[in-house]
Image (cartoon, rainbow, N blue to C red; front, side, top):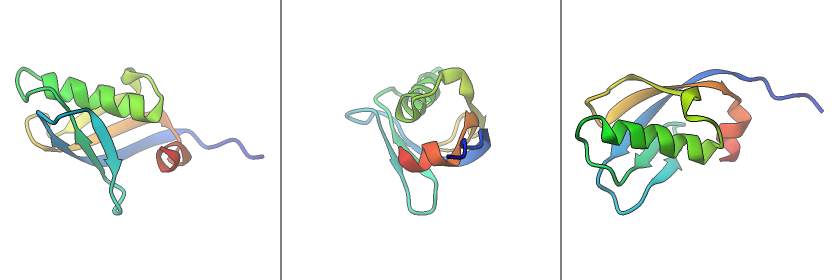
Length: 90
């Protein structure tokens, strides 16, 4: 069996802060919809987004970086050392 190729992947993410619970949903277009309980103040929602995606994929938080959209609901997130198969399986 071939080992999955680990790479750097960028994903579009739509964030909903102050949700009832932390949840990650994959959309049909390949983007993610992330619900976090944290408010969008002092970067708390961004930290919660990184933590929710890391938990969803089963990777470390340092493998996830918000590239653009730090103050927006629409973000671009870079995943390092993650295979497309991991994302598809999650």
